[in-house]
Image (cartoon, rainbow, N blue to C red):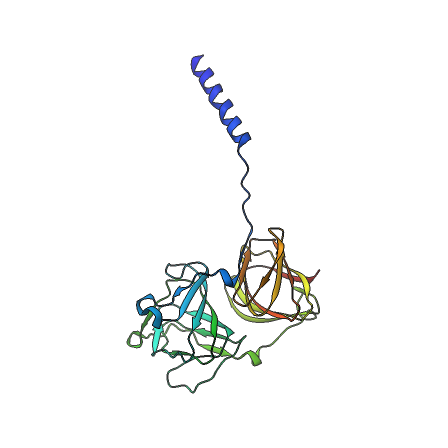
Amino acid sequence: MYKMILASTALFFTQMVLADSPSKTIKQSELVVVEDINWGYLNPLRGDKSPGAANLWGDRTKNSATGMLVRFKPGFSSHAHIHNISYRGIVIKGLMHNDDPNAEMDWMPTGSFWTQPAGQNHITAAKAETNLIYLEIDAGPYLVKPSKEQFNNGEHSLNLHADNMVWLTSDELTSLDSKKVTLSPLWQKQNQQGVLVKLDAGFNGQLSSEADSLRAVLISGELGYRSVEQSEEKRLEPGSYFSSAAGFKHQLTTKRGAIVYLRFNNKLQISDQ
C-alpha cells in the first residue's frame, strides 16, 4: 500500500509539471539573410590567401551533404588541383572560370552553372571586383589536393553559361501555376534534383514542396519573403537562403525579378497568390 501511495504521488506531480510546462514548437523552416552570414576560409591552411567560405546548410568539414557560399578576390587564380569529392557551382556575382588548366579562359557570369568531378585536374579563376558562388556537395569533407593525386571517377564536367539555359514554362510543367515563372533543370541524382527558377518582375505567389527537405538560395535579383514563421517581410539579397520541411509554404514577391536555386526530392509547386 505504501508503494502504491508513493507511485500515485509521483505520477500526480509528473502530470502537474507537464501541464505547467510550455509546449515547444518545432520550427518547420529556416531563413538566413546574407548580411548575417559568418565567414571563414575554404582552405583554412592558406589563411587570407584562400577564398572565403560560409556554410548555408550542412558542414563542409564533415561527411555530409553541404551547401555553401564561396567568395573570391578580384584576379584570383588557383594552382591546378583536384578535390576528393564532386561539386556543383552556380555564379551569384562576378565572372568565374573553372576548367582544365590548358583550356582557354571562358568566363561565366551570374546564373551560370558548372560541375566539377572528384579527382579531375582543374583550375578556378575569378575576374570581377566582386565574385561570389554557391557551391554544393553531396558528401564531404570538402578537401583540396595536389594534381599528382588525380583520378578518374567516371563523371564528366559541365560548364553551362547563363545564356545557354533552357527555360520551361507553365505550359510545359504542371509544377508551375504562374505565367510569371519559368524553370531550368540542372541536375538529378537518385531522388534529389536541382533547378533554377526565374520569377519575373511583379511576381507575387508561393512556393511549396512535398519534399522532406526543400533548400533555396537566391542567385540574382531581390525577394520579399514571408511565411507563417516569418510574419514580417524580409528583404533578401543574392546569397540569402531559406529551407523547409514537407508542405511548408514560402510567400515570395519580387519587384524587379529574381532567380532562385532549388534543391528538393519530391513534388514542387509554385503558384500565384
